Structures are given as structure tokens and as C-alpha cells.
Length: 264
Ligand SMILES: Nc1ncnc2c1ncn2[C@@H]1O[C@H](COP(=O)(O)OP(=O)(O)OP(=O)(O)O)[C@@H](O)[C@H]1O
Image (spheres, rainbow, N blue to C red):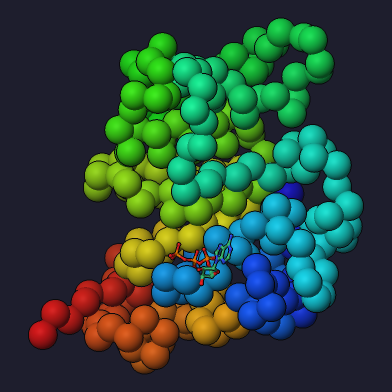
């Protein structure tokens, strides 16, 4: 799959609200295969809501969203799960599953009913456990993990799902710097080497600049801007959208904008 294949998602004049007040209004954009998208915006700007619309977990009140030309709401659940893996903000599991069991759940859309996992499923789970550095936790209960360990289990489950599209909601929020960089590098590598599409909400603007291809910025319930990192990440944007002062400079080695916050 390459970026020349036409749009993956088309969001056409979408609006959504949990109540009569819209959370998102008139959002239109096209997302293409083989790119790493950073979804940015202040707290409460609608990032998780937009991810929910892309996954079909929420339905637009107005407008439509298509995936490969077909309305997201029209996909059956298993077919959608074979295309799109989702990493939510937290693991909502209260049963005493092991880490291995939860990561294997990523393979469920591919395992026929009443069948055991095939060797390929087991291999993908082991690879995802290793990539997320949680191999030694695999027999532990997910009920007794730290926040960062739980987050790595969630990413591992999505990696094991091995889909062409990965949607992640703040995948590094609870992680130390080493595991943050590991995840961002893994996502970057998968986009570059295997052509998958990643859409991730990210609060760290410098991380988003360095690792993403394009940024989607939400502000006050609408799409503030969407474009290549180099044209979107500017000091005026950070001031206007995030009400923060920053120095944005070009990292010559990476060819990317870097963000340094001003504290005074
Ligand atoms: N289930 C819900 N019922 C009612 N309002 C909701 C619900 N979920 C979210 N909201 C509201 O919708 C708005 C957008 O929330 P959303 O979680 O999409 O923002 P976000 O950009 O992901 O925020 P954050 O950066 O804090 O994670 C917020 O004002 C929030 O309070």
C-alpha cells in the first residue's frame, strides 16, 4: 500500500456532540495511506472524539466518514478490526487476564471461531511483546501492572493485530522517556518500512514534530489546520492554539521543526 492509492479516510463535513452542543463541527479532511499523522489540540478540543468517529465508536450527527470509500458505520465489526487497530487511553479490563491473553486479543479478529491460535498468531504476539519490552510480564495479571506497563500492553495488543491502520490515543502518556522514544521509533519504522498509517493523539509538540509526517490541529471544536509538520508547527500556532510561548527552530540533522518552550 502506498500513498498513491487514494485516500484512506475521507471525513466530509462531520459534526458531533454528546449533547445538543457540538464538540466537533464541520470537520473535513482526507487521510492517506503510508503516513504518520499527529492529532493535536488542547485538552477537551475533541481529539478522542475524532478518533472515536474514525473507528465507528461514535457516529457523526452530520456529515460522513468513509474508509476505503465505504462508510465506517457500514463495516461489520470484525472486518473493521482486521483493518484498524485502536489503542485507547487506558485498559478497561476488570477480569484477571494475563498480559499474554490481552495481547492475544489483538489476534481474535483473525482466528476462526472455536479455533486455537495458529503459529502466525503466536509469533505476532511474541513479536509485539518483545517490541514493547513486556516479554517478562507476559504471565502477570493485567490487574497488577503499573500505568506505563498497562499502556505498553495496549500498544502490544494493537501491534499484534497487525493492521494497515493504527489509531492511538496518547500512546506515550504514562511512559518514561526510553519507552516513549521506543514506541515513537517503532511506529515511525512501521510507517516508513511497511506503509501502514498511524494516527496518534500526542500532547508533546516536539515529539509530534520529530516523528510525524502531518499534523491535524483541533481548536475550539473545529479543524484549525492540517498539513505537513514543517508548515504547521510554528510559534504563532502554539501561541494561538495552546496559549503557550515557544521557540520553534529547524533541526538541520532531522530536517524537522523542534519546539522549545519558553518558561518566563
Ligand atoms: N461521554 C461524554 N459525554 C459528554 N461529554 C463528553 C463525553 N466525552 C467527552 N466529552 C466532552 O467532549 C469534549 C471533547 O472531549 P475529548 O475527550 O474528545 O477531548 P480531547 O481533545 O481528547 O481531550 P484530552 O486532551 O483532555 O484527552 C470535552 O469537552 C469533553 O468534556
